Image 1: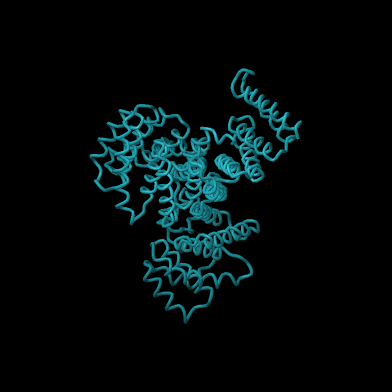
Image 2: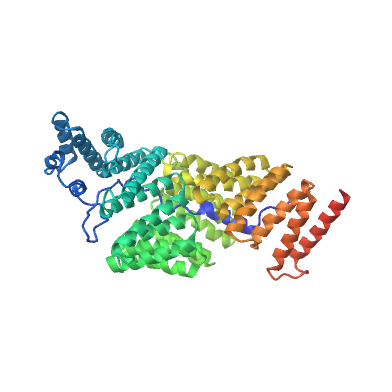
Amino acid sequence: MMRRVSSKSLSISRHFIASTASIEPNTNRSIAPLFKTNNNHALFSSKINILHLFSTATSNSTPAEKSSESIKTAEDMLRSVKNMEAGFGETELGLACLNVGIKLDQDGENPEKIFPYACRALDVFDKDSNPSLYLAMTLQLLGSVSYNLNKFDDSLVYLHRAENVLVKLEKENSSSLDEIRPILCNLLVDLAKTKTAMGRREEAIINLRKCLEIKETALGKDNKELGDDNMELAQAYNAVLNFDEALPFCLKALDIHKAQFGHDSIEVADARRVLGEIYTGLEQHEKALEEIVSAKLLLKSLGLDSDMLRAEIASANTLIALGRFQEAVDTLKSVAKCTDKESDDRAIVYVSMAKALFHLDKLDDSKKCLEIARLILDEKNAIPSEEAVEAYMEISMQYETMGELDSSVLLLKKTLELIVNLPELQHLEGSISARIGWLHLSIGQAEKAVVYLENATERLKINFGSNHFGVGYVYNNLGSAYMDLDKPQLAADSFIQAKKIMEVSLGRVHEDTIGTCRNLVKAYEAMKSYSLAIELQEQVIEDWKTHGLSTEDDELKEANLFLEQLKKGALNQ
């Protein structure tokens, strides 16, 4: 039987499900497509009268606009639209419906109530052979409404149409850049939000970067209004485990927030918290601890007790990463006293404490903490939450560390059931499936492993991109499962995919890329394709030599012996 993935592969697979996304869609953020068009720094502010662009985008105000000048509330707008139905033309009525729809959306009204007004506006503006800003805004509104109805596919269709309209207007110089750019920026954010909800995070990052570039061109890279944009990008990269890319955006956000809000602000505390997460991902744990402690002290001074408790837990987890286990236990005991007995926070505290106690060789105490955490979460299971999902995944990994793989699998499957009712967390399906597949493989259940690993490859390609290193590791595990099932051709296909991805993401001579190549050699050997196996094994040997290994080192000695075995097999064939 072939060698399975290395310990490095295991570590990365754990990181997939251990990191809950830090750029979750905010379902409370309503669409805000209208902006000031003067040259001050409020260019990209959404907190303005939603009729403002109507009055600046046309040289003459329409009767609908003039009649709306005194309208202040959504109720006033609804009455106005009803009164206009008999006495105004179609265009004016379309503008009024769009106006009402945007106002209702910004006020957080039921999206079902908004949808008819948006559709009525679309009927009007879609008839025009020349696309307009009004059409783009209507499509964006429909995208927002569809998102809030959890109809993400529909949302994406509307938003992409809106983007195409704006691009066409920009090319044809039909509208000024001052009018198009703010709308386009908000549209790109909505696209990113929708793609994130669908798990298409790499695509979401492209939208967020484009939005930031537009704003930087208009306002300058150091403008104080760009702190949130840099932070959003940092969190987006953090969510796909691209910590190197996340770091400069987070540092930039921190600098901007300090200048704008002061060193003792909630914005600075939040930036330091995220910076701590990024340094943890980069395994720079001392720096991570420094940022988390700073965030904790800030949150305490601001009286934000709940956020401070989470920072305390993050601090304890960093102490664990640094090997300071007793300090972590002492910190967590203090935090536990400040949490409600049946809260998610209390459960998370016990999970972290279990980890620290395990490292202190207090296995019974560690298991007891996990059981307490499970009891708390099971009682709250009727109302699933992001915190509960995070805790269940962490408990699962603790059971795995203890060697209780069956318990680990059961908890991960339970987590999959929970996220069905949490659309904003469904992007985790691929990562969790990958982990379940690996665990089934580890306990000799290859058939079950294949089902989860195949699902994981498709989901993770959507979530992280086809060439993300994590997808390569899952393909490698899938190949291992097929080898266990005596299906070397299918195994070879999976290993080839893994090899291609790892060569792009990790490099040809990375130890895990070499390990995948060796796995592919084993598949070729099982297929009796000795010429392919020998050629690839010779590459394995050359790649190991780049690590400075001598012929006496175990890896190189094993590789040379295997090459001789392959040559004998070829002769016997």
